Length: 112
Image 1 (cartoon, one colour):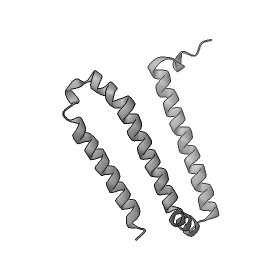
Image 2 (cartoon, helix red, strand yellow):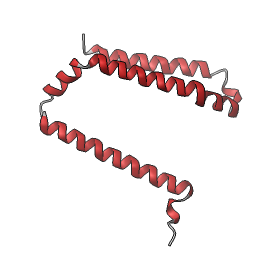
Image 3 (cartoon, rainbow, N blue to C red):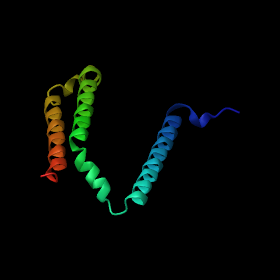
Image 4 (cartoon, rainbow, N blue to C red):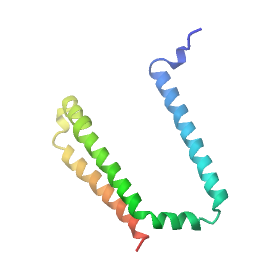
C-alpha cells in the first residue's frame, strides 16, 4: 500500500508540521531540564552574562550567513521572478538591517 498522504504539497505540509512539533517538544524538554537544574535562573543568567561576547560573535556570524545567502541566492532569483520590486528592495533591506540593530540594542540594554 502506497502512502499517498506523503506526496505533493500535502506531504510537504504534513512533514513540515511534524518537524515543527518535534522541534517544539525538544525545546520544551530542554527548557524543563534547565528549570530542573536551575529553577530560579541565576546560573543561566550568569552564564548568559559571562558568554555575552561569544554569543554576540555567534549572532554576527548568523547575520553574515543570512546576508550572504540573501545576496547570492535569494535576491537574484527574486529580481528575476518579480522585476517590479527592484525599486522597493533597498528600502526593505534597510528596514531589515534596522530591525537587527534594534534587536541587538535591546539585547545589550540589560548588560549596561
